[in-house]
Length: 166
Image 1 (cartoon, rainbow, N blue to C red):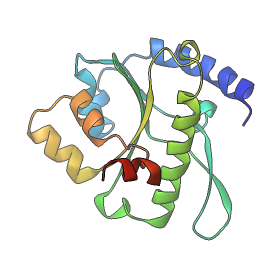
Image 2 (image 1 turned 135 degrees about the horizontal axis):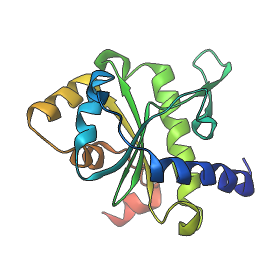
Image 3 (image 1 turned 30 degrees about the horizontal axis):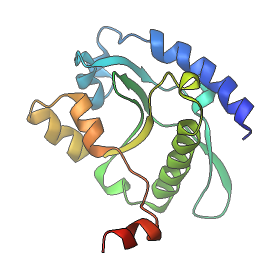
């Protein structure tokens, strides 16, 4: 996708992220929404595949066919914007989930390559959460921001950076 197209799509995201409120009764929608009342969360949005086309990511399925993917949630905190995908624990390692992960990581990397004013001055991160992790952090009384920062996926270090560690 061209840089200009990505910037145009992000204008829609900026409006959505800046103005999305958590509806009353949202905790009934999904286990992650229990965290939405966290005061450190500035915006929490359940992504709709039909209404939020900016988050429609392309990937290639395990069988080689092209497909589209939309993460479950968009969460804005004071420090970052997170694309969040939740899965049943046994599904986290499924080949198609891993392919979606790579597509989302690449998408976030491209967004982070834009000037800060085109991405609300915040870094974007992708988070893949298994249900057991969500429930464990809920039992501990953790904040959503803590969970997201802990679980966010980080790009792999290049081989040259690994050499510097030796």
